[in-house]
Length: 280
Image (cartoon, rainbow, N blue to C red):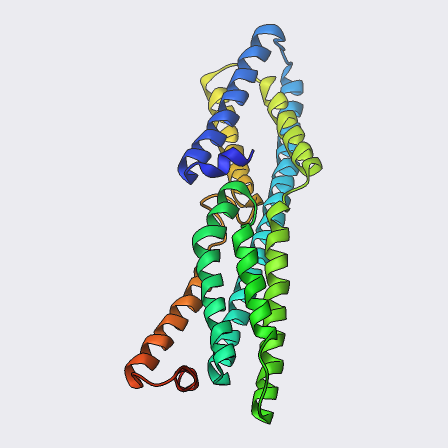
């Protein structure tokens, strides 16, 4: 079903609702044609009561599914926020270090963020996979951070913070990539769809009047919209309705802004002085 996530969200929603509606009305037409049922008044009352019970249970199943995928979506968003927070703290620590090797690590961080936003995120949204080049950029960042040598007590303290932030980024990046394969279990999808089919079967025993057709149509559209929501957020990083890279982009923009400010306030000075100015 990954191909659906490459469609615009409105087209995806229209497709899901349309398929649900077509299946419901088509099933109604086939049932009335090949298995017509004539109910006594008391049987019709019982059927209506059962429809109410089944639709309530089915609504609870759909609601549980929606809450489940929404929680996973929010967890993925928090992972991206945590990765961006670690990157922002790392950029400040590297700027305060005042060392050419630290400046090289800062540049590696900027290149990594740019690669994630421009190259890795589209692959995550369209193909549910990470970017090998972004992984290589992160490895270069990790190596650059581990090559930093402290020359004072202050730098030794900062180095501990730098390495801690790099390890945090590695952890959050791994969590983000593992989330690409997270989806609602097929068993839950099967139970939800089966319960929906049973609710329609009970509606099918009603006569084929315009009012009853309108009831079937309304229930199908309602379920279709619910299915669309569950499907749209089932994979947090796939499709238009997905977790965005804005937190990481803001960190990259902040690094660019600090670099421009340092260049304006101290033009022509060596790189260590520019890095120290970035902490003000």
